[in-house]
Amino acid sequence: MAREPLQLSDVTIQPVVFSLRFVYVFGSGVTIPGGSYQDFALAGLLALNLTTATSGTAVGLSTDLTTGVIDRFRTLRHVRPGRLRP
Image 1 (cartoon, rainbow, N blue to C red):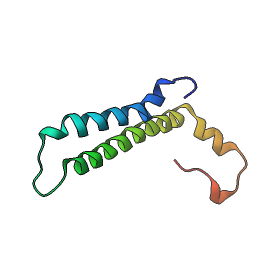
Image 2 (image 1 turned 90 degrees about the vertical axis):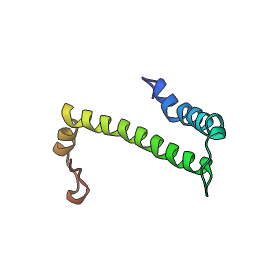
Image 3 (image 1 turned 180 degrees about the vertical axis):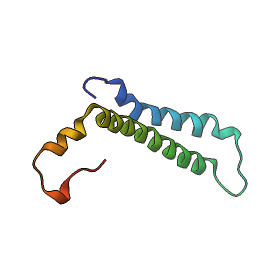
């Protein structure tokens, strides 16, 4: 976050903007029989935000695996049950 402050907007601003856009702007034009559009939209937006956050973590882990950070962890002295396995 310190090197790339725009990443903070992915976590805070984007979910709020998407929620407002899909629930209040598009929600008035969609009718769902037997349910509420807001319930479906918020569940979908939650899933979207979780997958977006997960992809950032996956990219970071992949970078660590290719640059040798995990190999450096393996050379350190540590308790056997507590070690990282890729």
